Image 1 (spheres, one colour):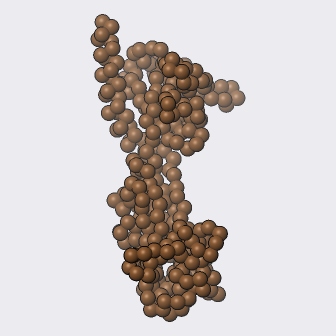
Image 2 (image 1 turned 135 degrees about the vertical axis):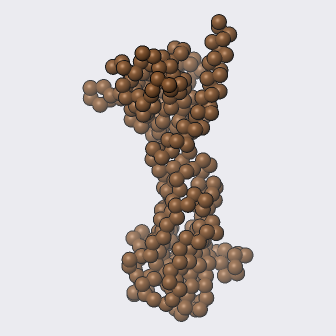
Amino acid sequence: MKYLTTFTQNLLRSLGALVLIAAASSVASTMAQSSITLISGSGLGSRDAANQFTLDKGLTWQDAYVTPMMPNYHRIMGTRYIGPTATGRGYPDQTIRYRTTFQLPAGFSNPSLLLDIHADNAATIWLNGHLIGEQDQEEVERNFQNPAEQYRSTSAAQFVTGTNVLEFAIRNFLDPSGFDYMAIVSYTPAPTQVGIDIKPGEYPNSINLGSNGVVAVAILSSPSFDATQVDPLTVTLAGASVALRGRGTPMVSQKDVNDDGLLDLVVHVETEALELSEEDTQATLLGQTYGGLHIIGTDSVRIVP
């Protein structure tokens, strides 16, 4: 009998790993998004190391110059104009290419980019080689005056894990030459998988959905993860939040539930709030650390009358 119980536990853990992957995908839309802000003229000096330009079709790149504002330019708050010279003049009747980069972590989802731009005289924008916008290719003031032109990308196929390249081609008809922009990249980070133990010390994890009590669940620490850094106010188990005491204090404690020498975080969720049915055999926990790391964990359950 003991062998059968151990076998069943191991089998459920294996199945749980598969469910965990599916749960990570299905709950991604419920998790807070992260964002990256890209601007022209970043830094304090006269050169912008975050934005580079090339004069030889990409063979070599150099930091863009932060250029003076021309009298009829409008500027996006928080940005500065950049160009290929310190004076903001030069290279008439030419197109200069610029680029900046940003990083996306493995497993990201729901990416988007929203970009505002002014350009003298006209900008064309690519994301990882995909055209996402183009101003009217003519010498007109509306290209560098408010309202700023706005472009966006929400196609996941245009974003990649690792280094992403946002590129601009700025066409200059006469003088001066320059542009400013602000881009917001948003995405849902993949949650970090952690171990959890529903009703620590019990097996099977029987839950009566009609009870008025709470269900304990331990978020387990590991050598690479400190469960005590999880914010209990962000934790849900099968959609149920952590129960609160009279003054709004979450029902939580720290203890080593699996005797591995590491403190774990034990939270209590309201049983009646669990979004489970009699057919469910797994429950998924979501949460976030104080440092912003999203976590996900799954354990077996048995729904009883």
